[in-house]
Length: 119
Image (cartoon, rainbow, N blue to C red; front, side, top):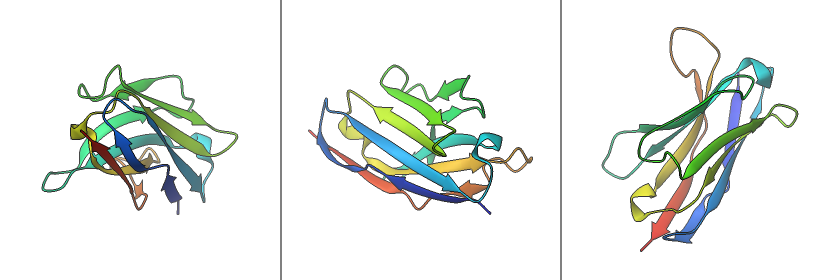
């Protein structure tokens, strides 16, 4: 089992920044690929970003490319999402997720943290 706990959400004005953190436990962190997803009210959950086990490769949704940065610190068992130039349309609950490498996609999910961007 992997436990994931997100933090760092909050209320910010458009153009501002936030950094989300996700602390993992229960499994060797460096064995997990990690991702961030978000879900806005009335919308389906969508992919935001992904980082490989070593942190060497990252992937982003087009909507956040150039504004968000995913990173990880395997010594601290933590993955981060630095969000800059925030827009009101970034308002959502943000979830981190862990991929153990099975064929099931992401296997474990955090409880989510709310990000609200005011105009």
